[in-house]
Image (cartoon, rainbow, N blue to C red; front, side, top):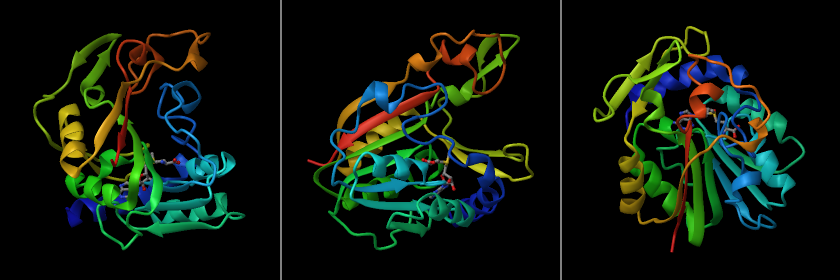
Length: 251
Ligand SMILES: C[S@@+](CC[C@H](N)C(=O)[O-])C[C@H]1O[C@@H](n2cnc3c(N)ncnc32)[C@H](O)[C@@H]1O
């Protein structure tokens, strides 16, 4: 675990938190991606104990509650996100913790039916420990669902509509962005290959149920596709998956 990365990202997430109120939350799996309504990765949610890793503003936990989940737990690095999540979930007895996902904060082990993470897991500075911890939180036969940028997507840049590979997919490491969401909020984001996510899940003990390289959601079927060089655009998403979604199980 890198304390330096965690400290830097924590400061910046506190600055940008307000941009993410209700964004990247279930039933969405990510920008332009297929939704839970389309993919149906969560089976029955009634009476389930669920843990959200990188719970942000709490809107995915709210979705879980609306679908019948009995216990709502969440962890997030940012105090401002946890503050917002507490407001989002104010009428529900949610257990929310401000902590890095890569740290063992004594959450109950072999306890949760479902652990999930929507667009947060890629922030971890230590993927191996994070997956080991998540595995330990799950009951036997419990499952883990997460979504994140497709690892190649971050390398796909667009210039006048021509999509090209930027940097090296082979070169894992970190990228520092000096601005985030237009704010002076430097963040350090790890770069990992698809195989790294899959192999670390296997090393942690998981059995993989499905790997989804998301298509564009049917919600955009009638949206006119305009040429765009934006990082996330329908134009790019129609050609390459923005989002990977993985479901894995503790046997
Ligand atoms: C795009 S938001 C996730 C939105 C959220 N999943 C939802 O359902 O509303 C990413 C979140 O990851 C959190 N985060 C970043 N690094 C983290 C870390 N190392 N440990 C825990 N949370 C982290 C951020 O504070 C932020 O709230």
